[in-house]
Amino acid sequence: MKEQTTALCEVKKSNKFKTVILKLGKRNIIVACSALLIGVAVLLNWILFAGSGNDGGYDGYDQPSGNISDNLNQDNTVTDADNTYFSATQVSRQRARDEALEVLQAVVDNAESSETAKTEALAGISAIAEEIQKEANIESLITAKGFEKCVAVLNGDSISIIVSADTLQPAQLAQINAIVYEQTGITPAGVTIINK
Image (cartoon, rainbow, N blue to C red; front, side):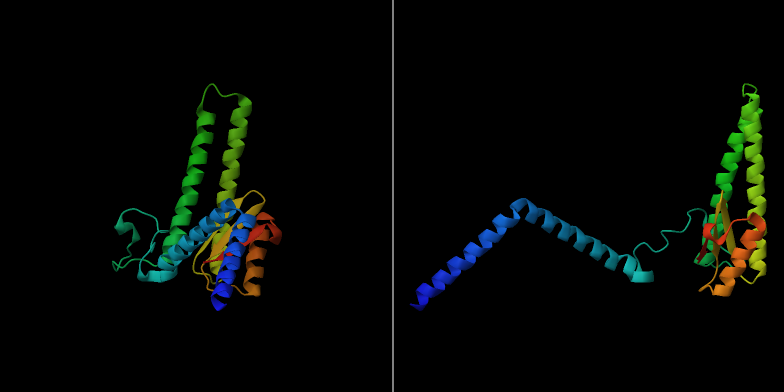
């Protein structure tokens, strides 16, 4: 009798499994398993590369490429990541500005450009020059408040300020917002402050 009961239980369990598969559908089960495999792959990637710190992986991936002598100081030691980050950000910002100025200057220099286009290009050059001056003033004033490094990126009615600091105290945030408002008229709602 026990053998028949065991056989019946196995048949009922088998039928329940088939019922569940039929209810969910084979396609949905395959999609769920695929999503699970992708999740496991992402987790393994994070554990092996991002979570490993300085042991390997993508270490140095966010550093600018170029001649190693560009990244050396007078003692022939590699500068720290923060200095490299701030330098790379300033160079990137300057390149973008130079390209914009070249385009605008080409419009001004083109004999076939209309007077309206030339006037707009000159206004654009003037606006970029004002932005550069405001950013330089903001960076100087913020570093005068005790921050080692600072990069300001002005974009119309908003500005991003990146400062070298482990943490930012509310008083420091208020100082930065006050400097930005004095130089640009941008309220704290338009200011993004990032500590690096």
